[in-house]
Image (cartoon, rainbow, N blue to C red; front, side):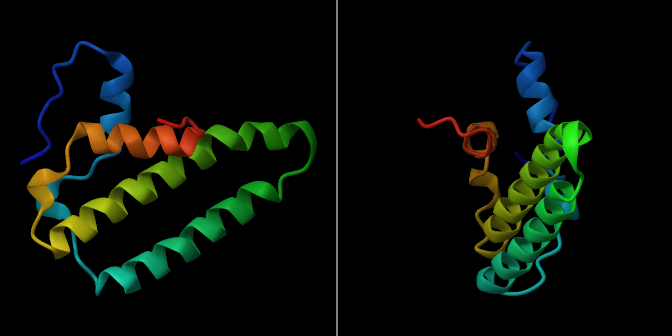
Amino acid sequence: MKEKEKIESGNWFVDIIMSFAPNVNDIQVTGTPEEMTSKASWEAFSISTLAGTVPGVIGYATILPELAALTKLQVNLVYKIAKYYEQEGKVNKTIVMHIFGTAMGVAL
């Protein structure tokens, strides 16, 4: 996506998922892809650990926020790596939907 273009798919689900995509101009590359991946993996570990500490039935309420946080983290990482290689124009809604599908455990 060039800018934060408005999705005119008519599908509310795609619009919600695409809201996780950052504005291309706001992306800050903070190192090599290996460094960014390592940092993102520690952030994902922290998010999952924190969400997993909630016991009992209340712990089920943390599933959707954890999924949203991890998906946003992964989408941002993909955009950062694409910007590092100057290929951010090739990241589109199909790639973002694949990331979300993988997070949900849907195999293609």
